[in-house]
Length: 366
Image (cartoon, rainbow, N blue to C red; front, side, top):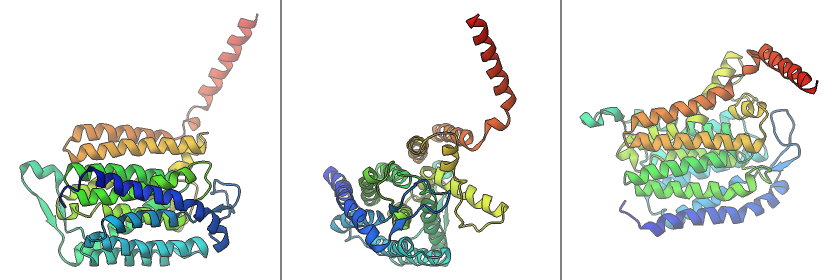
C-alpha cells in the first residue's frame, strides 16, 4: 500500500476511538436487560457488586466501523472483519449464557480459518539475525502455513482473554501493543497494517475511560477475545508477505508479559493437575495485588512493563539487539520481583530490624 497521507492515520484512529467512546454508555444501559452482567460469586473476582460486561460491543462497532469506512476495500482487511464477527458473536454468547472452553476454541479456529481463506497466512518465517548475511527464510508450504497461522491467531486471542482480570488491564495493554506494532509497521513501510492497528488502538483507548478503575463496565469475553484476535491478525496484514519479524517477533515482544503469564498459568495448572482453562488467582496481576498495591497502581505497573517491551520490540525490528536485550532484562527483573516473595526468606531480618528501631526510639526518649 502506498503512503496514505498523515490525515489518514489520524482519521482511522479518531473515528474508532470516538465511536467506541460514544457507544459505551449504551452498552452500560443495555447489558443488564440482556443478562450480560458479571456477578461476583468467587474470590477471584475483584469487584464487589454486579457489573455490566458488554463493552465488547462498543469496541467491536468502533473498530469495524472505522475499518469499514477506510479499509474494507482491501481483501485481507475484509477477511479479518468477517473473522472478527465470528469471534465477537461467540464472546457475546459466553457473556450472556456461558459457553464451554471447547466450543469457544472451535469458533476461534473457525475465525482463524476464515482469515486464512481470505489469503492472510504466515507463509514463511525469517531468520532475522541472518539478514545481514543474506535472506534466510523457512518457507511454510500448503497445510503447514494454515496450521501455523491458526495456532498463532488462537494463541494470541486466548492470551488477551486470560490477561483480562483487572479494570482497564486488557484495554490498556491492547492500546500499548497496537501503537507499538503500528509504529514498527510504519517505519518499515507497511502502511495498511499501520492503519488497521491504529483502528484497534483507537477502539481500546475509547473504551478505557469507562473501564479504568473504578470501572463502570467490563468488556467481557466479546471484547477481550476480539482484541486478541485483531492484534494477532492485524500484525500479519502486510508483513506476512514481507518480513515476518513484524508479523511475529514484534507482537511476541510487545505481548511478552501476557504471553509469559499465559504460559505460567498453563504450567501451574498442569503441575496441579487442574484443567488448563480453569480460572485462578495465580496470574501476575493477582500477585502484584498481593504485594499490597491497589488496582490502579497494579494496572499502571503492568502498563509500564508492557511499554518497556513495546520499545524493545521497536528496537529489535531495527536490528538494535543489544538495546533490546537491556530493556528485556529490565522488564524481566520487574516480573521477577513481583513473582517472588521475599517475606519467606527474610522474616527474621525484619524482626531484628524492628527490635533495633524500637530500642533506638526508647534510648532517644530517655
